[in-house]
Length: 294
Image (cartoon, rainbow, N blue to C red; front, side):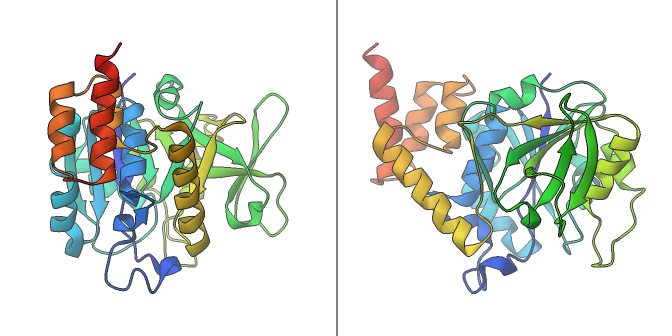
């Protein structure tokens, strides 16, 4: 099943101040690419053909300049305005005018990076009609995240948001898979004490309906939250080390679109030339040269 996507790229970015005093955090570099490229790459690999990117009104034109209409990656990108940040579930009502009815929805946070087996193409392979899926990752600091508790059979026992005494170490990553009725279910939510609609409350609705499952990302995968100062640095170091040692690009929507057949080598070459004499552009051209040798 091919999902449609929603990507949250708004918010205030307060955790990254003063870097975000004058720029949306999703334009900040993760080594050689803007942050938003990594989550777009994940969406592409998951098979998304239509993506709604949600951001603040003042950054609309900047995003249009960066990502265009998506045709260079073989997808359609719509950009929607978030007038005020009121929680993750707000994304459904904002994106609703751009969504195709009764089509599964992949929801992602623009500051999250997934890499490795179990991510990308595997995300869409795990879609079950009518079921919401959360993708979980073992962490050493579960008090900083939403946490899911599961039994030996994978059944969800509890969901907590940044618990003081976690019942486990499985953090809920910033990527979710929802059936289309999440639009209506999200409208049933009331704001929490901090004035936001909480994603954990939406997940509890699906859990109560026995329509929620947890998918634990396997060992060897990586999940990075680049929305903090330390996370931004760690993400850049991770990408730098991996690309240097393996000679492969990480989080490149251009490469992802080419690898999955959304675009051909001619389009990839055109994309590469738009990046001028940068190392990133050169790496894209090297992909084409490598393919010609086989």
